[in-house]
Image (cartoon, rainbow, N blue to C red; front, side, top):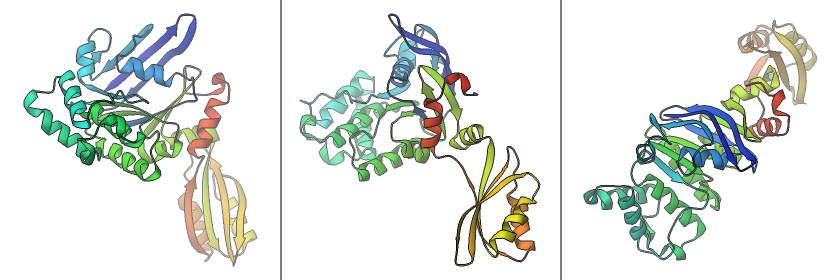
Length: 316
């Protein structure tokens, strides 16, 4: 649905984005992560046709954003970090205005405005002046304007900025509900939002792609081994020895011991799924298996590893 191929963008002598390539599949929610100044907003502005690329190619729904800008923009909804709202208009007036700009048929404007108002929970403020709304409500109005023409692609830059915890949860659920109907690129500094909302992430650093994949894939790539946490009832030394004998296990470290229970972290060779054998080792020794689960780096750990090391050290 979105193809970014060798995208480069310069501002005079400053190289903002360098040779960036990635794809977003139809119906997918992609998290776009990077520190301030990494090139996130520039990339999103090129995708939406707001800025032209210096070189490279971007296609949205099969349309080149430079060669066929009108067709690409028809299929794109964009919510920048500061929503482009007119504070002297009411919400209803503004949504009708945006709908006309985006060529929504006149007979459908009210229906579309009502639909997006309900989705974005702004029905109760439709008659209020935007300048008198809280920042949270303005963010929702900004999201509504991005949805008004029912685009195939949504590009959302910090959609939960300024929202309280309840509003963040509501916005997260709204974005998740749009997956499948829309292809979504979501930029945010709130890393838990990405892990709870997005299927894949793109990490950009110093204008270059540092990594692309699911959080689980990035964890495996950066750790170099598989990690399993296992909790059982029984003698800790014997349990540890039994797990160490399982083929593919590199190391077993105790994490916690209390009330006859022991929790151990098992590191296995990369690509080895040892969970079944670990469980068998516990059960066949007639110890009680209480929990067995995989463990990995948090998204915060992944982000820090990818954005604080030299890009040449990162394997894509």
